[in-house]
Amino acid sequence: QKEVEQNSGPLSVPEGAIASLNCTYSDRVSQSFFWYRQYSGKSPELIMSIYSNGDKEDGRFTAQLNKASQYVSLLIRDSQPSDSATYLCAVNKRRDDKIIFGKGTRLHILP
Amino acid sequence: DAGVIQSPRHEVTEMGQEVTLRCKPISGHNSLFWYRQTMMRGLELLIYFNNNVPIDDSGMPEDRFSAKMPNASFSTLKIQPSEPRDSAVYFCASSYGTDPYEQYFGPGTRLTVT
Image (tube, rainbow over all chains, first blue to last red; front, side):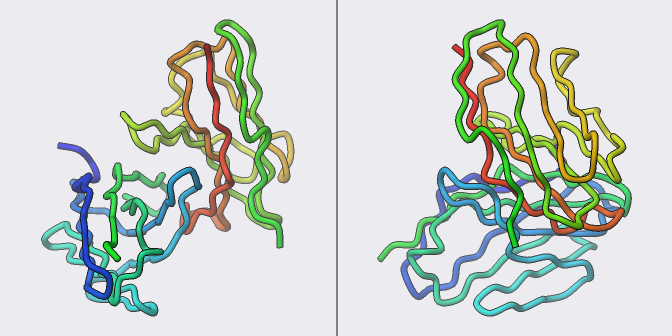
């Protein structure tokens, strides 16, 4: 089982709709969770971090964490064509440990 | 404030040559990470430093790869000798604190080994 798993996509969502990106992780003791956005040919950019169960909202983005199910998601409301990118889920297993990245989900917002 | 700076942005070299990639972390950050990204394997951590000391180099693929951080504002990743399978985008990232939270990535170096 891969440590951090994401559906590679592409996930196609109409403009203005909600995009839902999902990520599962294998190590139950994982403590910190991140979402990075990567445009084609660019570097990953941190957009959300979440450390406790529940929802965390930042503008049009909401991160959701369910440690019991080992599941973290990212919701993008009112999707825009500029949201088209690859979204990388990252997990930090322990406070002094490295971050493990998933391979990413390609999101395509349809105008 | 300047972000993470990497050089060169593109490097094309022949198999067997030595390649040196350079990184300047964000001022004040005390952790530095080297990653490699390919379509097949995604984003892989090669090595990371905290306060200029290598903490985890388990991701370094083999002895051909080496990394140094002589001071808080500079790090190098060297490949000697280079091979075609080393072709990838190499990213440097930095963060503040002893925990690898919230890393900020540089623009990357696209390496092509022919």
